[in-house]
Length: 420
Image 1 (tube, rainbow, N blue to C red):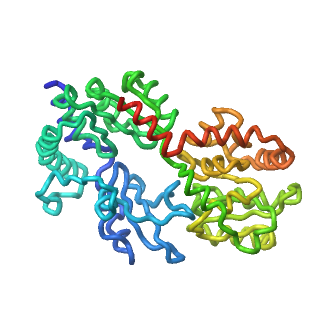
Image 2: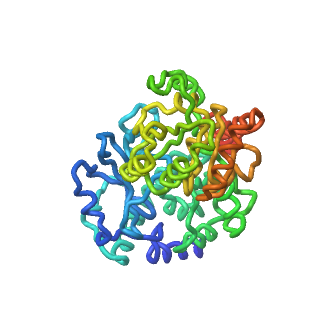
Image 3: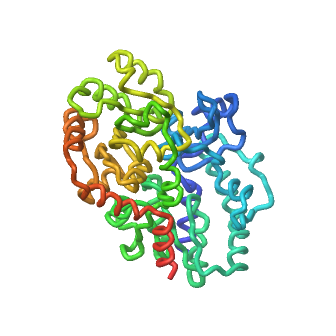
């Protein structure tokens, strides 16, 4: 145990809990100074998130990547049917009645007094904060005596305490997304792995990566899908009427932020060039974003104003999904792919690029969607034509079964089984 604690202190100094520290020269302060930006951003491993107005007046979550100093797309967050409330989970829980106690373990706020600039200064600040919270966290755990402690996001401090806690409290590490094992994270996890009771991952690809790198014992790794599907809500919302122009017409549907990650330029160009090959000659796009003008120019260039429609933000997308001929996804990556799973739940045909992580897992599962190689126009066109001529219901039923892995109830059952 002494050896493990000594090792973690070295990591605290050298790497902090993450690989990239605060770097004001990357443009954080100017981003926050923009009109309407929230004054209380949320910092994470590789960047910072905050809420700011979108071009149409709606609120959106913005992300600044520390490594590049540039904004980056947020798959699954800035969706046409979503409005952000908070980028700090604890703040959301405090202002809403969830019967969840949010414990502030450190009453002394010295953040403003600590150095924040430079690699070593930021590491020193992290080290001080970790030391100040070490004993308060230990005290509250000793007092409450929980059978389980589920740790998520900022996990280094409880992992450091795991050699002391593991005999009486089973620690479950919940991993989000696809973790970067650089900057000592893999070594740190491996160092304390014997004190961790279980590790949950949101995708099989993440599980396979941990097993391949021998970070944790294979028996400790469990697949815990995100609770994406709200059955009652979707079944209620799908019955709402569409705009009159789309009530009695067939159309393809694509949903997402109008960003490079969603790859709508490829989709619109491909649709415009090959539209005459399709039985369904209308494409509806829901979403807003920085590429809006680029997409409008593509539509104008091909004189496709009567065939392609950019409808912007829609609070309810389920009625559009439900009445569409098929869903088309051109994304460069999805994790796990909210629209794909919700469309699968509504038994719609899905035409999607084969990309990490969600679509690739669906592809590896089998007959769920009409898959095409990313950025391959000919393959996309062939899959659209194939979907139009395929009357089989087997694919839709397979996709429906797959989507049920992502329901709230399925999440509850998996977690309950893990807790015994």
